[in-house]
Length: 418
Image (cartoon, rainbow, N blue to C red; front, side, top):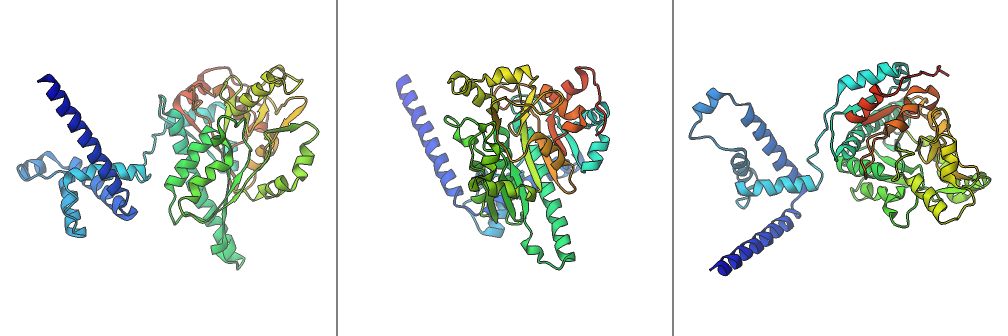
C-alpha cells in the first residue's frame, strides 16, 4: 500500500512538472505587450484592494472578488481569452519577471547620505559635479546586487539627462537632434556585469541611441572570460536597441615602458581617441585586502607563475596599496603601481578625477561589498571620499553597512581643496 502511494505521489509530481513546463513554453510565446499589461493590471487591482476601507469591505461582503479573478475577467472581456483563468495569472507574473518587466527599487537611507556629506565635507564636490551619494538601505547577501540595481537606475536617469541636453544643443546649432547619441563607458568585473544586465532589462525602444565604450580590458580570464567588458554589450544588442560599441582589445598589463607603444597601436588607438566622447561612465572598485579583485587575481597569477621577476603584490603593499579603480591601484593619498608593469585602462586615476570634474560628464562608482565573499570595501572608499584630488566619481552608490563603517571608523583628516 505504501509503495502504491509513493508511486502515485511520484506520478502527480511528474505530471505537475510537465504542466508547469507546458505553461512556461506557452507563455514564452505571448507578446511583451500582453504580459506587461496583465501584470500592470494585477498590481493595480492588488493596490486598490489593499486600500479599501473596512466599511467598503463589509458592504461588498459575499461579493468580493480577488485581483486574480478581476484580471482574468478583464482579459476575457478585452482579449476574448477564455484560456487565461485566475490560476494562470501568477505564471504570467513569473514570465513578466523573467522578461525584466517587474523590478524592485531598493530603499535609500537619507540619514546616512547626510552624515557622509557632512563628515567628509562633500557638499562642494557634489555641487560642482552635479553629483550625489545614494545609500541603499539593504543588508544581507543580496546587498551587492541591490547596489548595482540602484546604480543602473541612476545611470538611466543620467542617460536621459544627457540626451535631453545634447538634443537641445543640437537644435540650437541647427543640427539634427535625431543623430544624437549618448556615450556610456563600462568597466570590467562582477558589479559592472550586473549593472549592464539591469540597464538592458530597464531599456526599451524609447531609450536614447547609445554608444557603449569598454574602458578597461579586464583581468585574468582563463577561468572567467565572462568578466571581459565587451561581453556585457550583448545584454544591450539582444534588446534590439540602437546601439554601437567601441571595444578595448588589450592585455590587462604591459611592461612599464610599453604603454605609449600600446596607445599607438591601431587596435587600441581608436578606443583611446574616443574616450572623450563618453558622457556617463560606470565602474566599481576593489579593496587590496579582497582576494576576489580582478587586478589582484591577475597579479597573484603572475607572482605564482613566476612570469615576472618583481613580486607585484609585495611592491604594491610596500607602497600602501588600499584599493584599485579601473585597474589603477592607489594608496591613501595617490595613485601607485608596480615598478616593472603598468595596468591598462582608458583612464589613469588622475585622469578619471579630471574627467569627473568636466561639465556634463558623470562617473557612477559603486562601492557595495564584494559580490563573491561580501567583504566590505570601506577601506578602499575612504581615500576617494576625504581627499579632493582622489574623488574619481560624481555619483557614489553604496549600502547602509558600508556607509556606517565610513561614518564611525577612523578619525577624519580632510585634505585641502586643490
